[in-house]
Length: 263
Ligand code: SAM
Image (cartoon, rainbow, N blue to C red; front, side):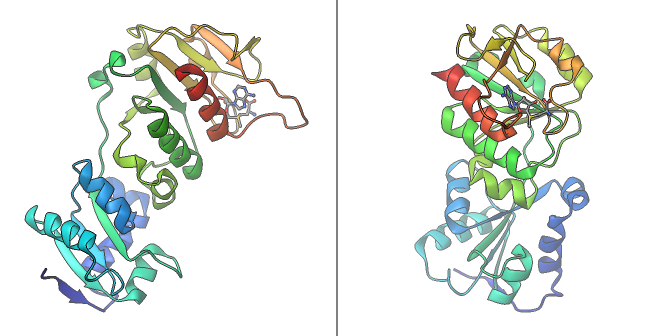
């Protein structure tokens, strides 16, 4: 396995990788950062090949690294051995993973979504918190959801924080983007139930009849589902609140809904 060795933080490749912490840079390049050898190997298994593979001294010699490096080089990517200090800077962590890889972002077009290909789909309106978004992508993957649709202005699913929270599911769960108006127009062709989740709904989520494929609509962390999206639902449900909390965390509520619909 042949790789360049880099120890300088001012190296152009290292600078380019560090720049991917900025959303603007990710949008301009269509790239994102993912950390960890296992995650990189899982990505390879799903057909995602790194454009850049940085690895530290602790990863050198591992068979999985050799495989990742060979796949990266064969696809024309850059394989670079770096110091631990560089890994710390690149990942902004004192205890960095031994591998940091750069991949291309994938957003699938909404008109390519085939509702019948999965029993359950999730749409998130204006989600703000990358940890919530990543956790929902991970849960969607675990439960066999067809994909996650991001509606309106949302946080970036390819931020380092969101990708970390997906634990690799960002490579397995198709992501879609839509404006609110585009989503509302597209929804008219949905063959199953469109289910809105609202604290003000009368129906208990356990009593509702969900026609498959079911599209679950989740509202933003602060404001809840907007009137525009509440208006296009066939069903509106709530998860009963028994204690003092006035709502559930968005990712927790989404997980409960996904498993209720796919049970
Ligand atoms: N203050 C917001 C409101 O009034 O809706 C709370 C939003 S909550 C933190 C974020 C999203 O999670 C909601 O829009 C809804 O989709 C879902 N959610 C949270 N708790 C829920 C519950 N008990 N029943 C149904 N959906 C819930």
